[in-house]
Length: 198
Image 1: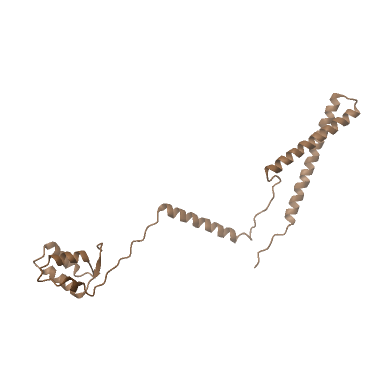
Image 2: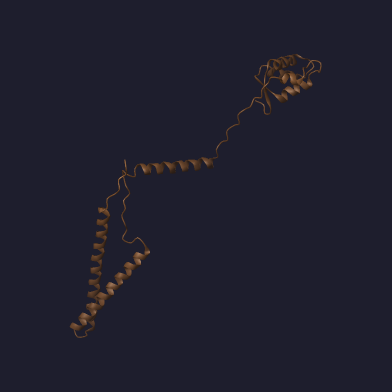
């Protein structure tokens, strides 16, 4: 359909177009246009005006009489197509929404494991390292002093005693670390999980 103002065809309008198609006063192109528009249900106002202006003033009715009782024909605008970028973003948001809904759906069926890490922060790591160094130094010092008292200031035996005390401190710290980790795991497993209200 032609762009611009379009009016619905009425009987007076069709009669005028039919008579204009047979009129020899009009150019051939306007006669052909009038002939094609006479069978249409809607007529572009610009084409109707061109035919009316070219017709003989004695043979044409007043333009307001031709337009009397006609209605405007409004065409729906063509829907805007979504860009590829917008489609991709919408698909991404839709996928994220589906993942959230799926996670909410299976939350009670397969709850996430809550396993606390022994070293959850740098502060814990530094504290544990300093504690190990202190235990090893204390073990070395105790072994060194003990062998010094037993073997009458022998440098070799004093060093051996210090090393033995250092190894003993490492073993003791290892045992304490295992005990602490096991107690945390037992405490975490003994906490009941809240059940979802039905």
